[in-house]
Length: 289
Length: 340
Image (tube, rainbow over all chains, first blue to last red; front, top):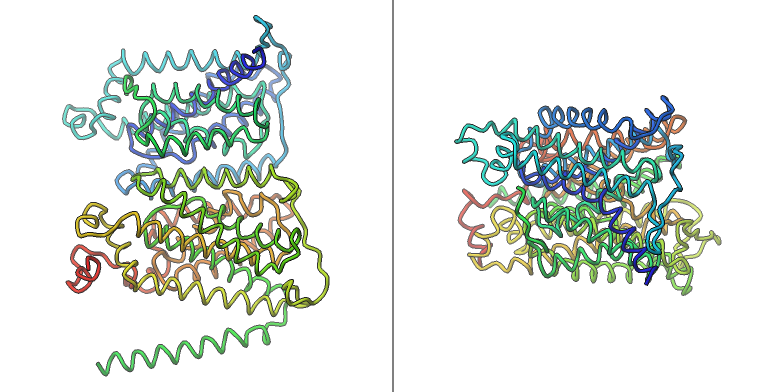
């Protein structure tokens, strides 16, 4: 029983990072109708940026959370304005190919700049954990989950309680009608892409204290995010949050009860099953966007 | 009529000239490295012609061709190393397995529209890599397997020089080009063109969408698996990262995209341009870092997607190729053919 609870806990905790990356992906899809294949690479870039800053300044990676978030928001906004925007009306295929190109570009640039080695940050609490009711809760993982919860609440507040957030949701529901109501669609695209990749980068920052940093790390998180987003229904934010926790748990249970190196197999089998039986998504949240 | 006869004569004359040129090439090329690049161009082009059937003709973007490439490669290697069979037998088995996977996966996900097919091909390639890494006793895991060279042996397809490999690769290339040509002018090709333009319209004129798309996916898987099998027979080394990474899928796709999709010569043109470029960047930047060639690749991908989405062959020709039939204002004959 305690191994089961332990696996569940680990699954839910890593699910926080999955939620950040996946919600970013689904937000971009909801507003722009664009599948961002470079989402995982933004997480990777966020990790490397944080690691480099933390190593240079010799302080805790979390110090740079806000700085990295703002920087990636601006990066995303500009990237959308000058590059992604050219493909906005050219169909999924073109958008996928363009973001795929960006994904390979970022990954290989990281390889050229930082090399293929696995790096990790030096933090005092890396191996610390809390012991609650027979379950070990890793401290840095709990911290990362906490960051995810706070960011999700902030996003909920933004989308539901601010004028700009409501405008963005309106664009997600119907681009043309929103434009007729005086909402500038181009601004919404830039904001959505900026926020979307900011979420991935924040996920990256929160991974640095307990995860290895290497150029290929984004590929894994990006693929997980696709699975989560399909599970939750493309464009559905609440669905993505629930899907992320679910995938975290499926992965942890497969690792515990089947085989450690097959943990992602469980995830992809879940993906194929969802495509087979409920391609519109497992969970219909539709509450947020 | 006379025009089409002279045209046909001109074409067959050109073909004979081309065949002579291609078969005499290794006698002229003394440099082993150049021959090696010609071989690489050929088998990557074969994989890419495979991608073009599903990603080009059918218009269903596959990002998982590495799965089929790996299945072909591992089948050929395992047949020889474990069951002591000729790798050629393994290659055929691999082609069969890849076809089965395409049939199964395609039947599940090709009915969905939007980006679902692309995502599921990505997931399929991930699953194949996880399995290759997991079943170490068969695949050798992450370290991979080396096929020892035991001297000239026809059944093991081991030769002392690269020339026999060149002729095999060129034969496979001819098969791939022939397949592309057949698809483009067949009933299936016209059905795929209709589907690409408008799935609802295609269905309303009686095309079985699933049947046509799944057929295209299976043909695509077979060609790509064949290329994978040749790759391991020629290189005598295999590991999950060199055959089943997303880089392999991207490379295969990019070759067709740069050269020109839905074109008899597009993927070959793409391979002729991109493979030597990879070799050059790898050779030139090897002292700096790995990954340089992928930087070049991704920049080319971005530029092509934005500025030449139809590929360079159409930039050169400035006219749409046969396969690029559009059905909207098209001639009546073609419409009725597609719906017949």
